[in-house]
Structures are given as structure tokens and as C-alpha cells.
Figure 1 (cartoon, rainbow, N blue to C red):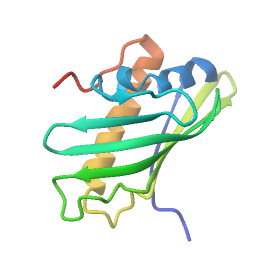
Figure 2 (figure 1 turned 90 degrees about the vertical axis):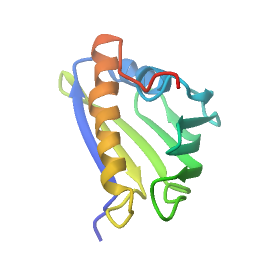
Figure 3 (figure 1 turned 180 degrees about the vertical axis):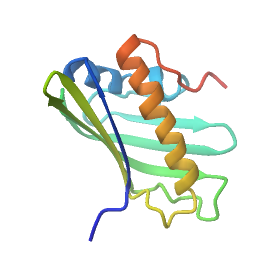
Figure 4 (figure 1 turned 135 degrees about the vertical axis):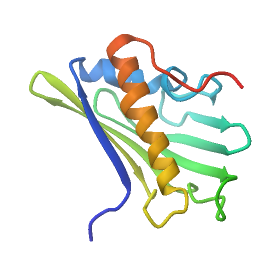
Length: 148
């Protein structure tokens, strides 16, 4: 059976190591108000979008220049019936050299079309990943959520 988890990808000219460093800089592309550490194996951090979303992630796989995996330990999404849809899902960044470019494949494992939040959440990920993270990698400045 084909995995229906949300996935998106993009390529940049920067090295896999530069891409990996940008992914670790969650405050630079997702939210300036992330609480906790976001770089090393075992680190945990909390993301909050006021009145809509709170989630806690743990870094469960960290392979510099190649891969990062966050396990969603807990999540509350106030805008859907099952407010814990994200709990126990995984957020995966796979990085690979493709000729002179570097490809980033982002997958939110478990965020599937059957989820009520799929459309809104996949749209938000699309913006954060293919716009803000990509921009951070290419220019050094992303467009994360600002301090609330």
C-alpha cells in the first residue's frame, strides 16, 4: 500500500551540510518562539501557534548532512474534532546530493488525507518548508512565525 503521508521536496545549490544546519535552526524557518533545543539527538522542543496549535517534538534521528527525524510526543490542534491527530506522528527531513544540487524531501509521516487537519496542515507545511526553510537555506533568512 502506498504511503499517503504528506510529503514535499525542493532542491537548492547549497551543500547537504548547509541544508542540515538550516533545518536545525527551527527558529529561523518555523517559529521564533520555539521553546527548547532543536539540534541534537534527544533534544525536545515545543511549537506554539496561539489559540490553534501546540506540539512537542523529540529528535529521534540525527545524521548530519543526511537526515533528521522528529517524533511528535504530544499535540493539540484546537481547530479539529480530534485535537490529537498529530500525536505519535513523525516529521522527517531527508537530504541527498543530486548532481550539483541538494534535494530536501520533507515527510510528515502519519499526516494523511483522512485527518481533518490534512488540508490546512499540509498547506502550512508547504509554506514553512518550500518557502521559509528553502529561503533560509538560500539567503540566510527565512520567514518564521514571529513572537506572539
